[in-house]
Amino acid sequence: MKVLLDMVKQQKKGVCSGVYAVCTSNPLVIEAAMQHVLLHNETLLLEATSNQVNQDGGYTGMTPKDFRKMVLAMANRVGLNEHRIILGGDHLGPNCWQHLDAEEAMQKSEILIDQYVRAGFGKIHLDCSMSCSDDPIPLGDHDVAKRAARLCLVAEKAWKDSGSEAPVYVIGTEVPVPGGTQDDSEELELTSVEDANTTIAIHQKTFAEAGLSYVWPRIIGLVVQPGVEFGLHKIDAFIPEKAHDLSEMISHHENMVFEAHSTDYQTQQHLTDLVSAHFGILKVGPWLTFAFREACFALECIEQEWIAANDWSNLKNTLLTAMHTNDSYWKKYYSQDSRQQELDCKYSLSDRIRYYWPDKNVDKALSQLIENLEQNPPPLTLISQYMPEQHNALIAGEIDNSIKGFIFHKISLVLKQYSAACNPQPVN
Image (cartoon, rainbow, N blue to C red; front, side):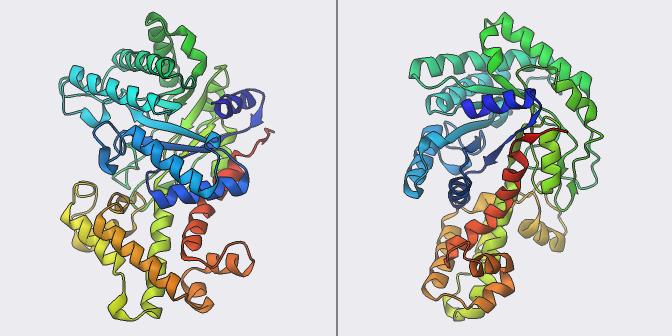
C-alpha cells in the first residue's frame, strides 16, 4: 500500500499528487487498464464493488478469491508484475443485504470483509451508511461508525491471520447512488465542511473505543460529494470554487485526502483540479465500459459495411435482447417511454448495459465480431470513418492493427486523462 500512503504524504507536502482507481469487473476493460499502466509505468489500482464480487458470487459470479485469481492470471499473460497491482473493495458493508435486518446483514458483511482481505485486497472502503430493514432512514452517524469499526476489527484480524500486508481504509459515502444519479434534473448538494468533520470525528472516537486507534494512520480517505456527478445524459462538472472550503478542511487532517466517486466524464482539467483540491483518489468505472461499448458499436458498424450479412455478429441486438430478457439492472432507472428507453439502454452515461456483457449470448456475439474483423481486416477508410482516433493512432504507429488493440486504445484514451491529472506537480 506504499503507493497510496506515499500519495497522501505528497499531498500533505503541497504536491498535486493523486491516484486513480479503475472500478470494473469487465475482463477486456481490465486488460486494457493493464496495458495502459504498463505503457505509462504506473501501478494499477483495481477495485471491485460488493455488488460485483462477494461471498455469494455477486453479479459476476466471482468471490473475492476468484476475482484475484482472474486478475493475476491476466496480469501474468500481459506481463504486468503482480506487485504493481493493488486490489480494492468498494462499498463493503451491508449494501447487498439491505433487505435483511441489521444484525443479519452485518454478519454477512463480516464474511464479505474477511474474504476480501484474506484474498489480498489492500484498499478497503468501509461503507455502512445504508439502512437495513429494521433501521431508521437515514442511519445515524454513530451507528454508521460503530458498524464500520466492527468490520474494521474483522479486517484487521484477517490480514494478521493470513500474513498479508496491512490494508488501508476509506470511510464515508457519496450523496448520490453508486453509478450515477437517476434524474438529470437533480441538483447536487456538496458535502458540508461540518458534515465532513463530524464524520471524521465520530469515526475516530468510535474506532478508539473499539481498540482501533492504531489503525487510524491507515485511514487515508474520506468519501464526500464534491459537486461531481453524472446522470443518464448529463454531466455535473467540478467547480473548484464551490469545493474550496472542503479542500481547505481536509488539508488540516494529517493522514487523509478525499476520495471522489463518480468522476467519470470529467475533462482532464476538471480531474486535475480535483487532485489539486486534495481529492487524491479519483474513481472511474462507467466511463471505461462506456468507452468499451462505443468501441464495440463502432466495430459493429464496420462489420456491417465489410462482412457478409449472414455472418454478422448482431452484437447490439443481442445486448438489447439480454437487457429485455432480464430488466432488473436497468428497469427502475430508465424512462418508460419506449423511444427514450431504447436510447437510455444503449447510450446512457450510467451505462447499465455493462451488466450484460457476461451474458453467454452477448459474449458469443462479441467473440464473433472480433473474429470476423480479425480474419478479414477492414480497410483504413472504414476504420477512419467509424474509429478516427484509432485510425490516427494506427497511422502514427502508436497501436497495432488489431481489433482488440482498437478497443484497448479507446479505453486508454480515458485512462490517459487520469494519468495526466494524477501526475505529481507542485501546487501553485
